[in-house]
Length: 215
Image (tube, rainbow, N blue to C red; front, side, top):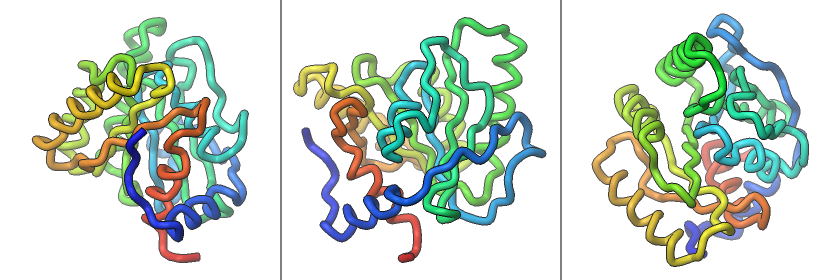
C-alpha cells in the first residue's frame, strides 16, 4: 500500500504523542458548550458507519475510547478527547448521511457542525473519512464545499482499505486526488488506512504530530 513518506523522527513523534494519555472530555451539543480554544485540535468527520470510531481507537491504541455503533447517527454530539495530557484536542463529529433519525434532529446536527467548522480558531485540520469501497459520495462533496467556503484545511482518509483489492483502492485514491486539485482548502495527499490491520496508522499519527511544537 502506498503511504506518505515520513522520516523515522516524524513517525516516532507520532508514536510518542499517542502513547500518552487519551481521555474523553465532554460531548458538546451547542457552541456555548465548547471547551476553551487553548490548544490545537483536529477533528474527524464522515458518513455514519465509515469507521470513525474504529480509526480513533486505532489511532489512540484504546479499543473502547470512541464508541462504535451499528446504529447510524448514534453519535449525537461533538465528542472531545484530550490527547497526551493537554497537548491536543481530538474531536469526533456526528456522522452525516444518517437515515434513521428525524429531519429535525438532522437539521440541528447539521447546523451545529457547520457553525463549529466555520468558527473554531484552534481547529488545525479536518480529516474527512471516506469508505474506500464507495469513494466520494454527494454528502462528502457537500462537506468539502463547506470546508472550502470556510477556508478550513481538510484531508481525505480512505478507510477499510483491507476490504478492497489494492488496484481498486489505488483507482479510488487517484480519482479523489484528481477532484482535490480543484479545491483550495484540501490537502493534496489522500491517506489510506485500515483500523483492523493497522495500515496507515503510524503515518496518520505522524501527520497529526507535525502540527505541534516539540514537547
